[in-house]
Length: 63
Length: 357
Image (cartoon, rainbow over the protein chains, first blue to last red):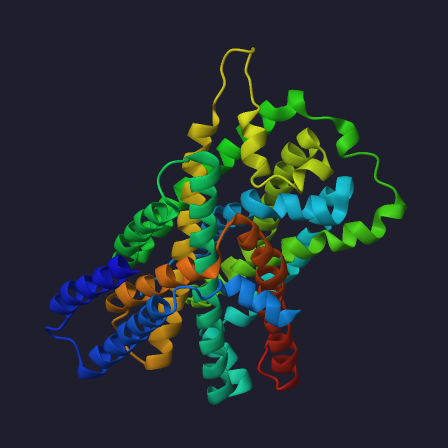
């Protein structure tokens, strides 16, 4: 998960660097919102690494 | 986003649908329909043709998403778009996890599943940043090549095939036959997801024109895949194998000398997975563009792919879980969103006089 977060941060840096010129503020806001969601999700699952898989949770919930 | 024509859309759909067809549809049809699963596939072609015609009508004059917003109103239409977007994200994560899991466990043991995921996502990233039309052209050629490869594989498994695994079919099997239609409907739903990305809006007549050919192609491919798996291993064994079609290809021996053709076949399997992933992600980006009203979608490829990767790591712990996810969640939700929703939209549209045809 640490490698994943590091990868996403690197992607943010490179991608933002490429797109920040000429992009509208609204587009950048949506971009940061999406990246924020991804990073928040990654942070939650790195804090709680023992969480069961999504399939396990969904099937348990259905049953 | 660049537009693709109806012929390219159908070829992309046929190529992408090979991915679920080869991975789990055959085994699910064998599980539900037994030796008569192929009759269920044949009957499901009628449902596919009906869906293709309905979508052609719904796409006329503005595209599927715009028509949906006109029929149910802007707030409800936008909410439906968000629901589709979230489901397609989950479906893309499932496709990626299933692809990597089966590749790492069955075909290329050694590297971790995450390695295959990152590699496929890197290719997706380049495709999503590029021109959609170029990918559609590549997919059109890839579709023909993949269909030829599947046909060759099925012909080469003929010596191993046993007719008693597929015949006789009696009226006592009516219930299993009807049940075996269900997994096929889950695959046909990908046509709705493809058309949601827009671009085929002005080509409603062409969508109608190519519908019979697409129906015949889907029927023939899926029956051939079913015959090559259940016909070789029998329906009982087919439903227990993790990748029955791959195992059937593995059993091919030409003149008892040429064997191990599965490595060649794997290329088309990966190509089909790539096409399906790109199809789903293109639609996610198209829906995102409509929802946030922006013209630049390529800049959202990185966060969307990062999200898909995170979800793929989270979605299942092993192959058994991905199979359960396919059986109990993917197929029912696909049928609801890919089949039920367009039919409902058609009925409401006709009631509100929004449908001309």
